[in-house]
Amino acid sequence: MYEGRVPAGFPSPAADYVQRRIDLNERLVHDKIATFFIRASGDSMRDAGIQDGSILVVNSARPPISGDVVVASVDGKHTVKRLVKRGDRFELHPDNASGEYPVITVEHELNIFGVVTSVITEFVRLAPRKG
Image 1 (cartoon, rainbow, N blue to C red):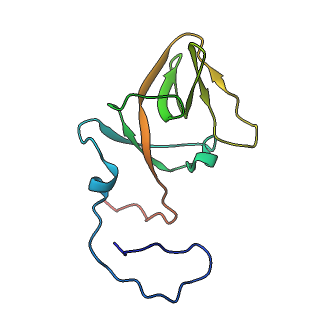
Image 2 (cartoon, one colour; image 1 turned 30 degrees about the horizontal axis):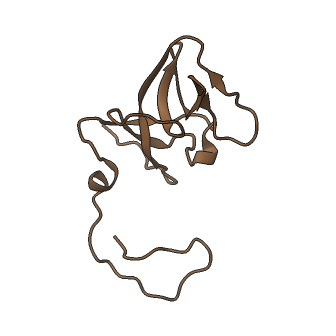
């Protein structure tokens, strides 16, 4: 891993150097047994950094709290949304300022499969392997 940060603006003349390798399991997986990966679809969570095709790192053992992004099932339908507590009820909010996506109010059954702890977005996809 390169020590330091890379500016997203103009290139820096400073010469960074490699200090050590980064282990993505060590960095992103905090509980091996309770962690799973799932690919997101759609853009209802784009303002949270979740794009269509992003890989979500999900911890199923972490207790969800209001404000967390969660993988949930509402009345049998799966979704990724921000969990918000309103009084004694929960809602699932999209993170997309376009206004295209409604807030999901939980009428019957809410099952939370886990809390999204990281998002991996691939900008360049490799060609599928030939079997």
